[in-house]
Image 1 (cartoon, helix red, strand yellow):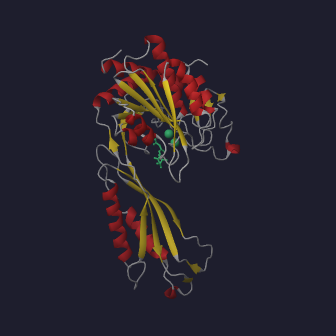
Image 2 (cartoon, rainbow, N blue to C red):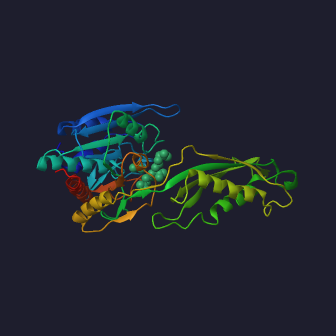
Image 3 (tube, protein in one colour):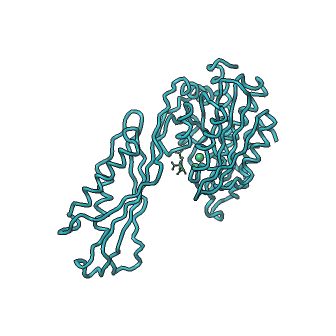
Length: 398
Ligand SMILES: N[C@@H](CCC[C@H](NC(=O)CCC(=O)O)C(=O)O)C(=O)O
Ligand SMILES: [Zn+2]
Ligand SMILES: [Zn+2]
């Protein structure tokens, strides 16, 4: 195994079937790869009621400051229908300049490139004059209860402090150098249940169809838009993800109906203010009678998923500039600074230190035939190398 070669490192990681929440040998492989670089490695399992136990890894190279954290996850989403894959999802097969496998871009590829970049840095300059830590969880694709948030708290309780962090999630929409993430939108999910009265569809006056209200209520959530965004964030977006009654009959009005939704929200809102707006819209629509003439207000309940993800924005311009300069030096492109897309574990890290994100091209993440261009692995490794050198130089080390 040549640690400076991201292709070899990634190949070893993809071959570990670490479908969330299983460790699948991925953290053990990573531990055996980085230990010879001089990392002090700690493996820790977190538990919580009603969630699977999850293995995590924290490793530190060096003892002094400045201290840079690289964060990521080795767990991957399930491959789905393996027969639909043109190559084994854990084979790491290479064809036409691409490596195939679950996690190729999301985000074993990012980890492999960072390890290779660090190995090259150590080979060329020796260990950085400061510290580099790897904070790697097996619970990013799962509930995210027994992962990054607890690992950060665990390390912080032992005295660990970080000056900055970089997360290796796939941030580029189309090509390397497209985009750096400098923050993330918030996320809030909920379920609305409307109670009605079951009955015969031909005698609707004897029943109370909950879908009439639920249709008006979901429409009220969608329109008018929650905001039009700002210079930092795209417009807040609410998606209805399911409407269900469990009804299999064509001639029965169901007794109740549920709708599920998820909101990706800008920093105009937080979980409380958004929850209040959603309740106000539902109350107004439940009282309106256009789809339910002659009836009183519909009876409904709303349940929000616990712990909405907060939005955040990284305001450390020096860190953003350092990463942008590294991307530009390798790709010749100025990356867009964006808060689009999903949430990431950076939402936990931002409470400990400034955090930015840059990784591979995310086009195939979570898809059948997830794959990465070998050229992109080399580009990302060089970007991480440049970032390491630039960040430690700016921070006053080598
Ligand atoms: N499973 C976790 C968090 C779910 C995070 C997920 N993030 C992505 O898919 C990343 C995509 C991107 O980088 O744009 C999401 O946004 O749903 C939980 O639910 O806590
Ligand atoms: Zn990911
Ligand atoms: Zn993912």
